Amino acid sequence: MEPQVIHLIMCDGVRAARNNLLRAHIDGLQLVLRPRQELPVEHDATLYAVLWGFVGRGILWVRVVEDWTGRLIAGGRRHPVVFPRRPGELVALRFNLRKCPLKRFGQYRIELVNGEQVLAYQPFWVEPKG
Image (cartoon, rainbow, N blue to C red; front, side, top):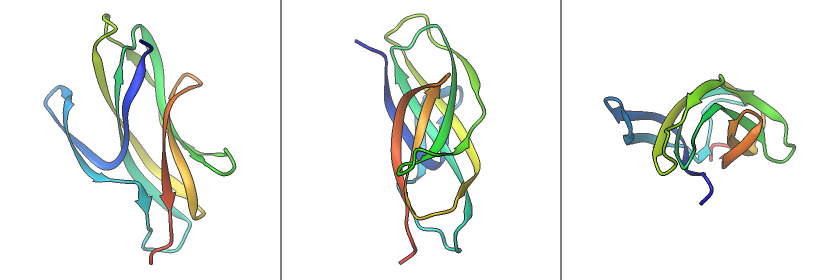
């Protein structure tokens, strides 16, 4: 089977067992954001990813894209990763996204990227408080 991203979750935070991100508690799942203040806002989030079947090395990072335009809104730091030697192993990773500028209501997406290749994406929405 091809390597795959099993989970890509945007949340408030991830609490994990010591040295084991595969045993984690997800705090505040984020799918629809309704800012309390007027746009634009700066949003903080944690991204939790579980990958299976990846071997070798990679440069992983996350980015936020406006879904309707494809325009890059924010990008996180790039992290060099050494994957397990055996392809059947799971790997869990946590990324922090800080001060992501959200200027308009609408659909966005979080992308998990290796180098420049998008491995997975997860949509989310910014809607007026109602």
